[in-house]
Length: 439
Image (cartoon, rainbow, N blue to C red; front, top):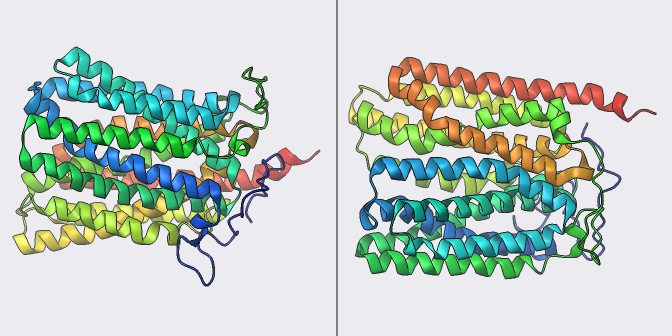
């Protein structure tokens, strides 16, 4: 049984609500609801425009600092680590502020500041300047992500929330893929002017998305926010830091979220050092992952607003990660053809684990939260993922890259245990929620 929609959820009289069956409508295309819901419509357009710019920077940033600015590899790594740590704190701050001020205006200003900071990247010619710019970019991007989470939590209910997340995740993959292709132009030209020109264009695209966000309706703001006043009212509801169940969900989701680090950090190093497969196969695996997410994220996210279903889906994702880790481990010390086949199969299984775990975590992060403080809860949840992303390189190095096959087994066990823990939290919520709501 799914949790009932919150009684204090803001109504959207000027929108067409997303049906409980999911984002797809009978007789229509997969994204037919995008053109019918103004909130989702604008979030999709803003996400597409901004992720085009993000794809450019994901492709160029490290190489720009290494090849053009000529920073040592250690300084580049330190720059990324420090800026990521800043982003952990601003993840909660963005959600917290979205409960006290206008989430719509906050999202606009954060996006504009991020765009200005991105435009300063070409001006960064030393480590201190590059570090300052990177910290501002990561801080505002993390805060804006939590703010958008609060907007989704208020604009939709039940399956509509998960469906919106799934659509935006799909659009994000499309935007980043196109942006990465655009960044490839600078890589082909390989000149400082090419790098800087493409990065400035990407920053302008990011700033343009703010004007789309400005057209969101005022109903996405917190109920306690008075649109006619800039003075925040006192916050109501339970703080996420006083909710042990939600904090446990945040930690376990962050642990499972290290699977992103497996694909981004562990896998390329594993292919190069421990398999006979050519390094170019890694790019093929990333393309395969992107295609699968685009094709299946919306479809497999249906029903995960139901707490019990989300818990079961989490367990399935954990089992799939165990299988994926086993296949990755099996690709070592075998013939090149076998290694490539095992890596491709492992990425397919890994991608479905990623899709299912994302859908499960989205549903639980919404349904287990106190809806009167949606921003703070989404901010705390985002902190868990940020911490998991920071820890992933160290954990992967201590397991897979140090102990090989045995490391893969340990890593698979970590994913499975975290998924089982998430399922236990979902079952615990179902047994305690009725008692908590009783008079």
